[in-house]
Image (cartoon, rainbow, N blue to C red; front, side):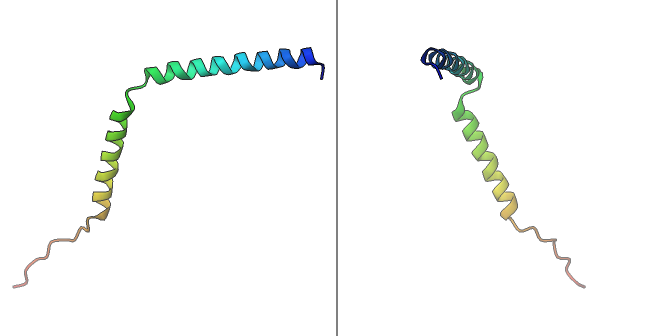
Length: 64
């Protein structure tokens, strides 16, 4: 491949990557803070584990 063609393709690819990085940065700024999402997520996991680990037995009826 000719050196000038290779350089032109490199510049196009670099510009595309910069554009993707800018879009990612803007999307990340629009998201709510991660620490709140993380705390909520782990709380839901903990609740789910408690529900799954608790054995549920039917109440016994005393015999007469």
